Length: 184
Ligand code: URA
Image 1 (cartoon, rainbow, N blue to C red):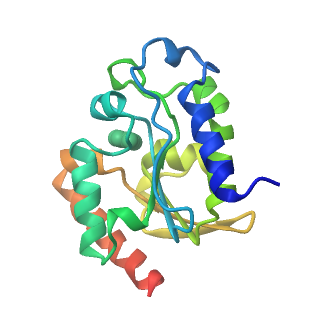
Image 2 (tube, rainbow, N blue to C red):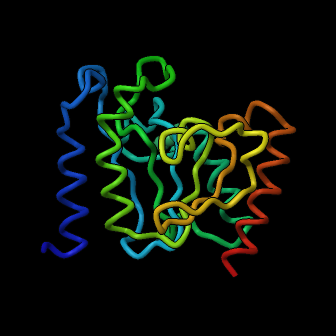
């Protein structure tokens, strides 16, 4: 068995050169995700946007700024959590990921979860929730913990939605307080 550090590096190298779906033809850089191997919390978004596609790093645009702000508010540093998305390549014009793209990409996320083995996996928004644990109505799901296959998930909104809707932003802040309480 490769050690975990080598396994994660190998996986991220594989993502960087992946051609499993057609998104590889339009992307600039693939975005594997980043964070420490021993992260207690993993955040999973939807797909890279323009900034992420340019830099190869997750959540570095406006959504990322809000995510970082919300992390800091509950006493977490961005550097201590693992941050990634369901898709590792940007969909053209940030369209919603297609089912087959999610299907082909999920291998990478499954392996990241297996290698990092976080205590809590935070699913940001409908695409992350439906891809990882199945469809839920976000209005009912948000702020909840969910156990499945020995993993603990926390369900909340995507920061892009919080940027658009003040009410969603307020609910997401409340959700993060619940996450904070669980992390104590
Ligand atoms: N939104 C996501 O879901 N992921 C990113 O990496 C950036 C924005």
